[in-house]
Image (cartoon, rainbow, N blue to C red; front, side, top):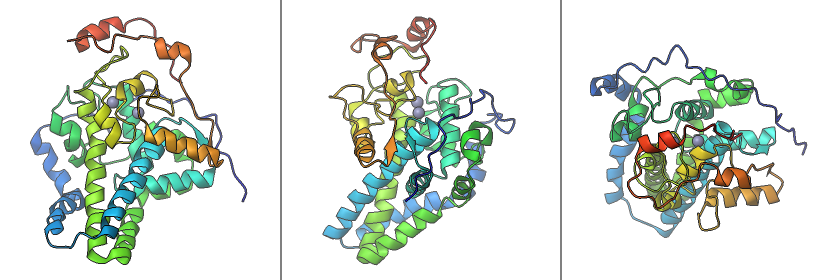
Length: 322
Ligand SMILES: [Zn+2]
Ligand SMILES: [Zn+2]
């Protein structure tokens, strides 16, 4: 099979907001119109009640675990570390597989996800951040911003590097297809038990584990680096999100394929990427150098360090992360 390499020279991203993103009104009333478009999201949560009416089989539990792991990797290893940050390289056909895996988690398409995430990094914990718990509320950062109409469209100006691939634009437009096919597959494997546990329960677990990185990872945990936001490292969140909980590390050095910087910082997504690189499916995994690991280092045990103090500390010129 011919491996068509994705060009490594990605266009320089322009730090500008789309005119369609005025970030105007974040009141609860603003959410209402979004609820109609978000009906599948809400119905999926309501359908959780089915767990009381279907038998829990061994096959269904295994399905739940497998679909959780694969789709969480689809979000962390594919959507986040590849499409949002280009932390490694791959072939064009495997790039499509990564997009498919991410879509199967039912969190919209790769361009939508990567575009909004790039906006988060550009404006972390400022009024222009799509989901800062400091600028809005916990619930807005966790789920409100997704239900709102404010962020319904793909911010195409944030993803010029991916827009030029027609198969990715197609995937972004028809992002629900992999999820629906997975639901059908779960049903074929173990009937209604497979559908409920392998798809519904697993999807909702992946949802809320992922969402904790937007909400809890900017509220609870320790800070190793003096970033200009309030990102945190959190061991528990790193476990359930396959490594994303090392969020302060990530904000410090965004383009790294590993978010756990040391051996004790468990990062299952990075281990998975290493395994894929051994198979030749991905390559050129980026890692922070020794200088970056110690730049803007603060005592991780420093008690009561406020965001304001850290922002002052971070006023020194920063070493580029990519
Ligand atoms: Zn963040
Ligand atoms: Zn990121």
